[in-house]
Amino acid sequence: MTRPDLSLLDRRRVYSGWNSLDELDVAVRHADGTSVEHKREIIDHGHAVAVLPVDPDRRTALLVRQWRAPLIGTDDDPFLLEACAGLIDEGETPDEAMHREAEEELGIRLDGLEATGRVIMSPGCLTETIGLYLATYSETGKISEGGGLDHEGEDIEVVEMPLDDLFEAARSGAILDAKTLILIQMLMLREPVERVAL
Image 1 (cartoon, rainbow, N blue to C red):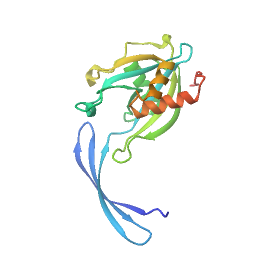
Image 2: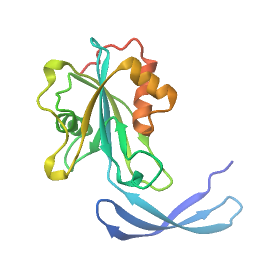
Image 3: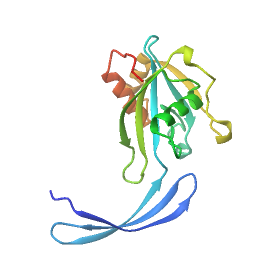
Image 4: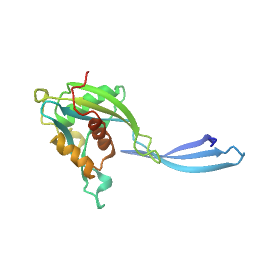
């Protein structure tokens, strides 16, 4: 199959807030010479990072549980169990953002951090990519209770879970968050779990 030629004709910002909404006009020219124009709405949320920290000695992992607005009023529980994650601030590297988020949300300093890839969670409407990390932590790395930043209105519960329970939750379909499921599966492929290098 020959890929069509794509041309961005126009991009308009129609809303700016927690997210930004842009409207795109795209021309698609096919190999046979025909051309079609499409309108698409896309959500620009910036780029993010997510980490699954593991204590290989105690065989536990740290996750967060927090409410998610899109799930309010649906059949799904709005309090989602997830990997620690957050947006990359301007001027930050992904690694710096990941260490900052772990301190804010989990209340820990990571012993080791390993970038394992990058994913586009919903390419049909989101520009956001998420850098995925596995990390190690220990009880000596605790610096606070975590829970997020008060001024950002974050109501985050820190959840420490045995790896066997976490793996079973992934196998049974109890983990609904995609980035978290991907990180758990990456970890399962690495059994036995060992410390990652800085």
